[in-house]
Amino acid sequence: MAADTSTTNPVRIIPLGGLGEIGLNLMAVECGGRAVIIDCGVMFPEEPLLGAGLYVPDFEWLASGRTAIDAIFLTHAHEDHIGALPHLLRHINAPVYGTEVTLAYASRRLKERGYDGAADLRRVRPRERVEHGPFGIEFIRVTHSTPDSLALALSTPAGTIVHTGDFKIDEAPVDGEHFDRQRFAELGAQGVALLLSDSTNVEREGRSGSESSMRPVLRDLVSRTRGRFILSAFSSHLHRIRQVVEVSREFGRRVVPLGRRMGESVRLGIETGQLAFAAGTFIDPSEAEFLEARRLTYLAGGSQGEPLSALAKLGSDTHPRVHIEQNDTIVLSSRFIPGNERTINTLVNRLFKRGAAVYYDAIAPVHVSGHAARDELAEMIRLVKPDNFVPIHGEYRHLVRHASLAAEMGIAERNRFLLEDGDTLVLTGAGAKRGREVPAGRVLVEGDVASDPALVGERRALARDGTITAVVVVSAATGALIGGPELVSRGVVGGDGTSAHMLLARAELEQRLRTMRGRLRAGDPVLHDEIVRTVKRYFGETLGKRPLVVPHVMEV
Ligand SMILES: [Zn+2]
Ligand SMILES: [Zn+2]
Image 1 (cartoon, rainbow, N blue to C red):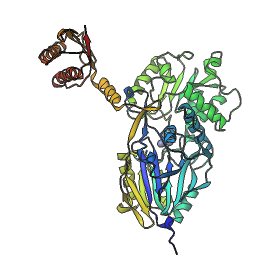
Image 2 (image 1 turned 90 degrees about the vertical axis):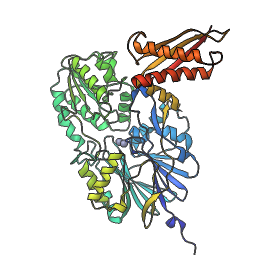
Image 3 (image 1 turned 135 degrees about the vertical axis):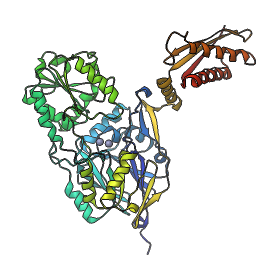
Image 4 (image 1 turned 120 degrees about the vertical axis):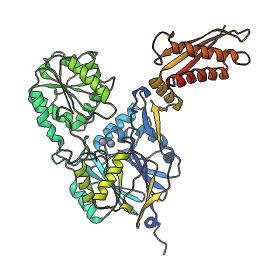
């Protein structure tokens, strides 16, 4: 009798993003040459000067064609889980599963990115199950900072794998949809080969607290506000938005979404029933102009200090329709993401200068996290009782700390695996071990095209060390240097080019050009290189800077 190969095939866990950074979440689970994908997210560059681009995971391994991709599962609507879907669907063709809210955001993202292929979006509900190749995939409700979020349980030939997605354990969820503790416990009782769990808030003690604890805080702030009430939160945080709308209605305020993204999100919230309010609750900024300030609540994006956001415009008083005044209250209802603090602080100062009362995480309890803190993470391990454990969704230190939490929970060292993007884990019925690495990384895209890495390098140099333009005039007839070099600095040294460093750098370049052999010609790459090298060397040796040097050679 032939052996059933599906029970002997090992299952490979292949993280291609999200293990080593918060963002870019993408994982493949493969068995016998067939795979499913969990999430497909983006990450925003930390350095704003890198432009409007964003990172997507490197799809090299997925696009190589060696493995058939049967399906894509989206755990929830956040950008770090769905944002790269349009890019992925250019490489592979597979059905995409998600809940109603998740798919609403995903299809908006597909449209925005001009993805004209007909994506096969399949709506699922918690506790449903689908089959794909060697896998059965079950959807389990979790609570998080966007509605309709899922964990996944994959039954595979090597046992059950639980992927938590992003989660917290909210005991009093705003929409009444509870974290499905019972189902996790049932799976744990049946036996789970591997748990992959969200590490974001492993550094926080205790529990995250319920989202509904925000309601009395918002109610108190709204009740004390005599002017406009402005809430700035992530646009996909429909539970937070729902609570501020409820409180606003109680005090006779209409709600005005500001900005395209917030407007879209409110519209999706209404369409999916997450923001079920009477007609007339939400109004346009133009309608709001006819109402008194104390009758208005505004929803504004930009709580991370994003330069073109509604909140930034309010801070600089450049919003075409809304101007902050005394008696207005502004609440930045989100965490300051590390790296953004300076920009946010500048924004907060500006908002104070406009005379508003400003509340933010550091001074008032105006935010609760959507990610499980340590006690909830421990509870997840206790519920699922996994044989093996891999921390996911975190920077390296989060993964390390989550692995040591698992150790405290009694998971032996041989059963804990610290994987980074591109590392793999092989599960057999008998146990788990590390497998061979696969290519992984990130690609910066602007619009729909991958950016030239040289361009990114140039922007870094510009941001850090400034730029120097070197103008050189040569004779078309003789190839001799007849003018310049002139050096113009932006951000390298101050002044008008007569500073000692500029004069010395100029002298050194001139000396170099005069000793170059042969005729100097405008299009000569050797000449260009020589100019760049000489100027860079001067500023490197004297000031420790590596400015971007732009040569301009003119023939006359
Ligand atoms: Zn999330
Ligand atoms: Zn996430």
